[in-house]
Image 1 (cartoon, rainbow, N blue to C red):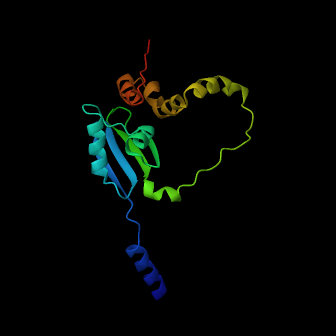
Image 2 (cartoon, helix red, strand yellow):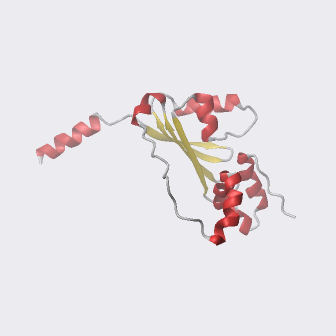
Image 3 (tube, rainbow, N blue to C red):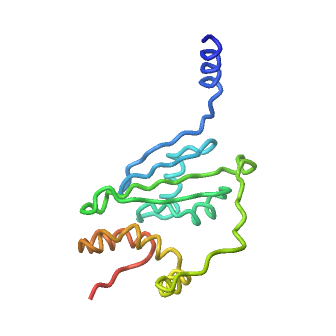
Length: 164
């Protein structure tokens, strides 16, 4: 039993200092994971300074380009479809000093053939894969006719829904 407590104590003392922080923004909460050398508040302040007078937009590609991170993953979900400020964004960051821990998986060389009923979707998604992601995330807003909330979210992706 003493060995267990010693091991537990060592794990607590030697634990990695990487943790998450959650911030409130105009469009909802942003949770940032993986920062070790950067401070999350400094990151958010820098994002605001780069795009003054605009809501914070945690786009993975922009964060990699603007801050030089090795890898960034960004996703969101909607907590309340009636409230446009209820987006919850999760941003996972791999800083440059952790790049040796990052292992990419090779793209498969083979795949199953596409089912006929999905061919039309494939032609649309193939042109802009982000459309599929945004469509899945915002379908309930469209279905329930929350057009203002939907357009607010789509503006993050520089898209707009024109309902006739």
